[in-house]
Amino acid sequence: MKIISVAVMSLMGVAAYAGPITTVPWDGHPGAVSFTFDDCEISQLNNLGDYFEKNQDIKVTFFLTGGMNAGNQSKYFPMAAKGHEIGNHSKSHSDLTANGANLKAEITEYKHTLESKGDFEVVSFATPYCYYNDAVEAEIAKEHIVNRNCQGATKYKWNEEPVWERISSDCYQGNTQQSKGNMSEAKQKNAWTVQLNHGVDGAGFGYGITPSDMISIMDEAKKQELWRAPMGRVAAYYRAHFVIDKATATDIDGGFKVTWKSPHSAMPKSVPLRVKIEGADGKTVKQKGKEIKAEDDGSFVIEFMDLELEVVGAAPASSSSEEVQSSSSAEAPTSSAEKAPTSSADAPTSSTTAIAQNFQWASQEPTTFAVFSATGVLVKSFEATLQSAEGSFKALQLPHGTYYLKDLRSSYIKKVAK
Image 1 (tube, helix red, strand yellow):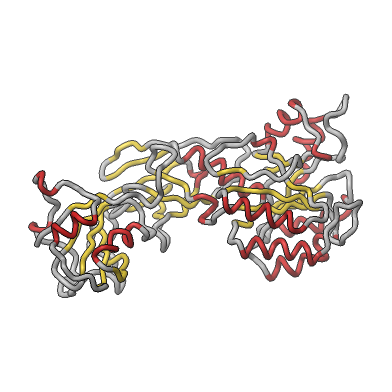
Image 2: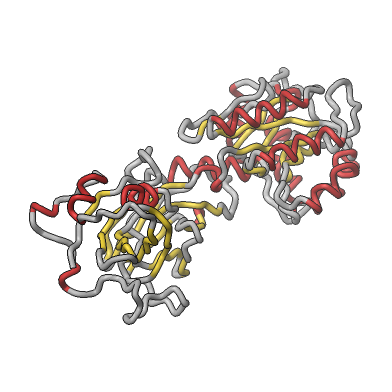
C-alpha cells in the first residue's frame, strides 16, 4: 500500500510562543465581554435576578463598597455561589488619590473584610470615581490581579498584555447602541471589553440603565457569541495565557512534562484553562496524577493553578464504537508496508497537485475520507473531493499529532501530520 507523507499547516496559525501548550483564546469564543455593576444598587438584583436565573451563560461582577448602600451587601453574597463575582470597590468609596487617604485600609484590608463575609475570593478591584495614581495602583496590585477604571471602552487584544491595574471600561450613560458597538468591535478584534453599570432602573444621575436596555445589551453579547464572564475570571484566564504559552517542556520517560509559575499571588485558587497540547496524540495527559480527557474539539480543559502537566505513555485503547476493527473497510494502517517512508522521493509536500500526481486519483467525485489517530482509532470522517481533501482536513479541530487519512473509495492511505 502506497503512503505519501504530507505536511499540513497547524490550525492554530502562527503561535505566539514556542511551548507545547497553546491557550485557546477567550475559552473558545471570538472575544469576551465583562459586565460590571457598582455600589450595591439593589435594583441590579431586583430587576435582573430572574434574567440571570434563566441565562446561566451570563456571569457578571458586582463591585461592593462600604461607602454606598452597604446594607444591601448581604443580598449580593449568594450570587457568588451562582458563578457571579464579588469585587472590591473600597471601604468608603472616597477619592483614593486625596492627601491622607489610608490606602491599605481602603483597598487591601477591605478585600479581607469582604472575603470574611462569604465563601468567595475577591481578586478584582474598581477605583472609586476612576481616580488613580501610582500609589493607588501599587496598593491594588498587592492582593488583586486586576483593577477596573473608566477611561472609555478599550479592546484588549489576545496577545497584547495590558496594564492589569488600569483596565478601562465604558461607563454606561444611556447609549445602548454604543455598548453593542463596543462588543461588535471586540469580536472583530478577538479582544476583551468591559462595561460599567450602576442602577438598573433608568435613574441615577444619568448613569442608570433601564432593565430592558441592560437585557438587550446582554442578549446582544449572546448573539455575538462573546464570552460573557466576570472581570476576575477573564483576567485570570488572560493572565494565565501569557505564562503557560511560554512554558517549555522537559523530556520524561515516554513523554514530556511542562511546569510554570503563577503570575500573581492573588490568582484564584482555580483557573480552568482551555488549551491545545502539541504532541499529546496517542498519549495520556495528566495533572497531579489525574487524567485529563480531550474535549470533542481536541482541546483540553486543564487546571492552570496545578502549575504542571505531564503527557506520558500511550493512551488506553478505546472501547467505544468508533474503535477501528481489523475487519472494517475503514481499517487504519497496521502493516509494516504502511510505515512512514524513508526515501527522499517521499519527502513531505503540501501541494495538492503533487498529492494528486502521486496518488494518480482521476475521479473528481466527492467521496468519504476517514481520519484515524496514530493508535488506530477513527477520529473523524468527512466528504470531500481529492482536490479539497487537504483543506477539509486542515479545517478539522484536531490537536497536533500524526494521523492517517484514508479514502474509503480506494485502498489508499495518507499519513498526515499536524
